[in-house]
Length: 146
Image (cartoon, rainbow, N blue to C red; front, top):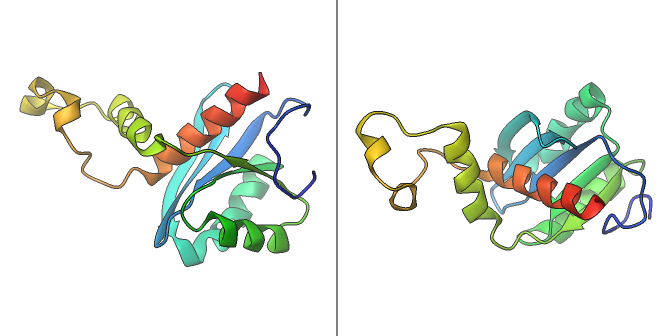
């Protein structure tokens, strides 16, 4: 399904995706390679998502968007279909992605100083992790591609 919901089955391997963790006020966005490398990450206001995607799609030659299924997903999906009809959009279950995103954040930014002594489960990242949640969604997409 070219610009509709697709689960990734029976598709050619995709080298890079743009993943979106949709939220009511803000969205996490990440461009991720099939090797799992995060090429670019950002968090932007929900109303700015479509404008934020255009330069990323062009810069990385992205042909596939991975979109989390929960909060505000339906409205964003429709908006993206209208604005980017040539891009495939795959809906991914985002259950538990925020907890995984915290783990991804701590892997990328290990605690320093005395915070190293505290278990990560007792610490809260010092910033929103929506962009890391987008990475988790991309990883789930690539897992389904295998």
